[in-house]
Length: 615
Image (cartoon, rainbow, N blue to C red):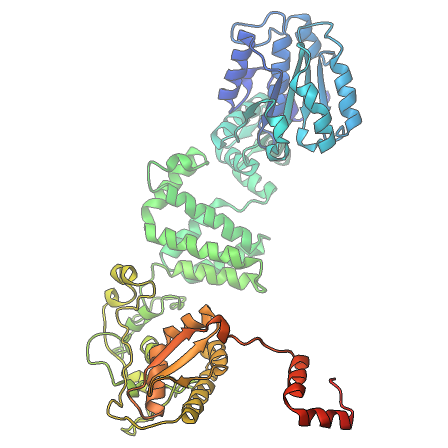
């Protein structure tokens, strides 16, 4: 006896036997019973969900001589028998992928002119209609809009967006849904029972998930696994045949991560990779698993789990043990790994670091200072309780004691920080950055310790960052711990000249260039020439709004630097945008050469005498 694959052998022959499309089949049955048929239908949806099958059943039903009261074909009249025996001349199936030219459309249009000999309608089923060329679509338009009264077109496609809008507007559109996992499992049970196969429901659930919403794919995979397992479709046989990573691995990884057992996680990862599974596949599968655990925490989201009932119970059990913040953080970490996986040159190391981070989410901090470095990896293999009394660590700069004088935290632009003697103490950089000036004043107390280390004020986390009131008051609101630097030479009023001003301006810009954070703005500031307008007020004219905004942001520090270097505390700095008349056009080398010749007759004579020319 000839073997027929399950996808063909168990293809639905009636509307009631179609799985997962009850709304559409009910609509089609009502159209058959009422006789209110459209001249063109468009069935669209994913692969293997019943588009062509429903088209055939519908074509058979509308040509049936004695349809049932529910809109099904009788299977007894001559039209039904001809269709069942595949000898019907009223139903035509075309593959638009291989018949996509204008000549093919003209041949189809010629066939529409011949009325049916048996039955009421001539039905043309055009599969994969999106493959038609634009010219073929245009040739088909008129016939599709006004076909003969006995002609019905049924178009089927998986890519609705590729069809011309003029075609869509002439059809009744039916959107087919993806098959749900429970529907696929139920259908596979029926097939297995009819074939006399033994099965485990978990095995059918794996097949249903692998099919990704397509019944045809599910039946093809089922045939493959049934052949591999010789009629005994078990869970172990299915995951072995399909090379699917056992979901138990995901449950084990999450359990180990909750217990901070990094060593066991690394061993499990090594076993998974040794069995031939890709690290990226593991991360994607684990992310889907964590998502399902998150959905299982709330009864309202449990229906979103497309798994078997037994798997739902396992997810719910693990969801009770997993804190919600842990799940959120794990998803964030795995999403970052997925983004970086393709670009990584050492993919295994990336996966290992990702799993280590996940396994440390619920692990307590190693020391009080560790709270300032949330991205630092904690102790990997054991939670060791140190008996030695921990040394006090430096705290983030903030409230607690008076702020050190500005001069003590001043840092030369481009000068490297003096390394701290105790490298285990992290140095707060926030206060140093916020008070950094464009000059350097050495400490007067003779201390060799980095002045930044003196900032050890202790604050609560609530005082760090921007408050909502700060954001409302200004677009560039300063954090609550920020303190604007002040002039420390308020008594000095020494006279200075324009030459001295320009000299100190160039020196300040040069010091700024030594710091890569200020290199760009310092280079552009070096091209500016400060002028004394109303002594001792200084004016700077810039040619772009971008530079104006950047300089206004550091205007106070520029003023303090000039005031200290020029020994005049009354200096005020004004920065404005240049007028159109003040912007001088930039000349090319040739234009500069011509200008020099016209303005200096002596140079012109020298050029003529020596026979010089512009290179």
